[in-house]
Structures are given as C-alpha cells and as structure tokens.
Amino acid sequence: MKVISPRMHGMLDYGTIALFALAPTLFDFDGPYATACYVLAAGYLLITLMTDFPLGVMRMIPFPMHGGLELVSGLALLAAPFIFGFHDDNILARNFFMVMGVVFLGSWMLTDWRADTHTQTHKNVMPQH
Image (cartoon, rainbow, N blue to C red; front, side):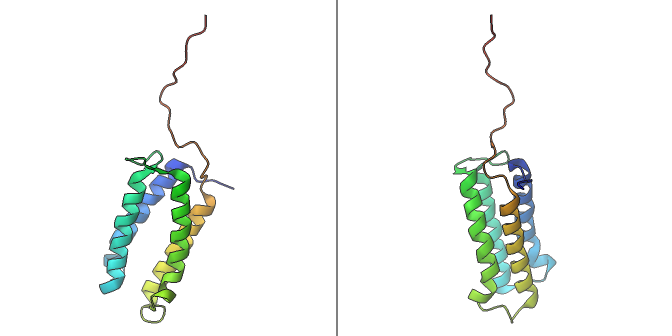
C-alpha cells in the first residue's frame, strides 16, 4: 500500500536532511562519520531541491527517478558499515547508518512514486455555452 504522497515524501526528505546534518552533534560523531553525515545531508538536499514534486525547487529530477536514487541509497546505507569497515569500530555509527538505510527502504516501499506531482491551483477550463 502506497500511503506516502509526494508532498509528504518531501516533508520526510527535509526531515531526513536535518537529521543527517545534526547527527554528528546528536550522536557525537567525529572524523569520517561526521563527514559522511554532512556529505549525505548536502547531497540529499541537492537531490530534494532538484526533484519535480511539490516541495522541490528546480524540478529537474523526475519523482520516480528520485525513488530510484532513494532505493539505491537505502541499500548503500545498509552496506556502508561493512563496505567501509566500521561495523565493529563504532557501534553507534553502524546502527545509525543501518537504521537510516531501513528508513530509506521503508519510505521507498510506502511512497506513491506514480502519483501526480504537480499541484493545480486553478484549471484552465473553457466555459461551456
């Protein structure tokens, strides 16, 4: 069941960006963990601003393509602690990245990627005579 609309997805995106940006402070991450969080926040902000959906600004990335990027990101976040070898070094960082991967995948599964992403404030309807 696709219960997340494009507008709601945008709100979740901006919340996720804030969480990545604040994670180094909230969880006392430093070094590469903090850098990864800041890079993810900046990259995700750019993608969100460029997505063609109600909370996008530049609207250059089709909403379904945003979904594809989110799917790949979720899988990458789950794998990152093992690929980059910090699954045993920093348990909190490992858990954070893996939880975010699950959140991304959950959001991907619940979002209606085929929904109409354009809001219509008025209709161009010719009066009928």
